[in-house]
Picture (cartoon, rainbow, N blue to C red):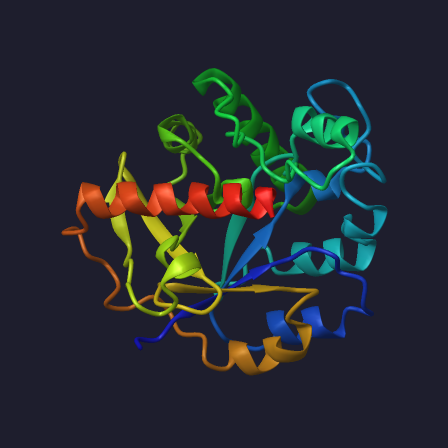
Length: 258
């Protein structure tokens, strides 16, 4: 398999910070995905209800030492900053889950819900802009890449990302949910954006990892992280792109049913 670039999703940073310092000082190239809303515990849902301690646990919000490390590395040439949504949660779906007394629907999405309800193009432009503003004001970071929470998006999300001057967009290699390591989905163009695909265990330009869940392996993984090379393919068909989106949605529906 070709070299991959490590993509670290920074959530639940509840250690002493030594791991983060080693990662940012490693000299290796990686994607750093951060959630703007986790910088702002006072942020509320669109229904003006609490998020902190209710939808996102309090220990998921970035501690001061993490903010300091992010700020210090805002211009680190080895780090490609990724904006992961704005709130990274859906208040409407959280309320549905609470009323049902079940563990579904999973509320950790933002632009498109599994029941088919989606934010308008104008709303998506607005919330992505708000998230980008938070990163700039709080950390001085101007992200290069947009990643929709839970990898759930529609064409309006692509248009909204482009309207907010993003050139790159993250999605998941949905084939790996059902056919691990079988089908490669390289970087490709869609709606005027360069699409990067990421995966936990399969064939994609970016290899996903979570700061809390993969902490013991991250220092090993980052040593094999390489800049994106030979991964662009403008011959990816619309059918492949469509099937990939379908598989992402199918997996998340099955996950909710389970």
